[in-house]
Amino acid sequence: MTMTTKDTDSADERAPSASLTALTVLCDPVSVLLGRSRLVGMADVAFRQDQPTSPGELALIRDCVQDLRWLRPKLKQAFTDAYAGGDIDAASTLRLVDRFELWSD
Image (cartoon, rainbow, N blue to C red; front, side):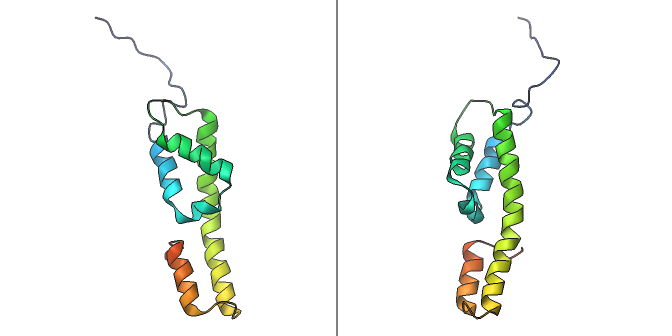
């Protein structure tokens, strides 16, 4: 019996944790603010089995992670501004911060 190896790895072979990353992104409460097609694409990566991740899917994951990094502090700031402006009360602000898990943002 002989074993062969490849000299180069494709992008999908270098990303064994892509499905776990996609699942982590989907678990972020702020992910509900991503577009539906992006959420569907992330779910496809997160829940399928025994299929490699394409370069396009890796780009989707990267873009969603970057968007969530941008959205989280903006969302918290929007809640803070609404509270400061008297548009929502303290209890509502805290519920929103808790709902979107924005404590550390």
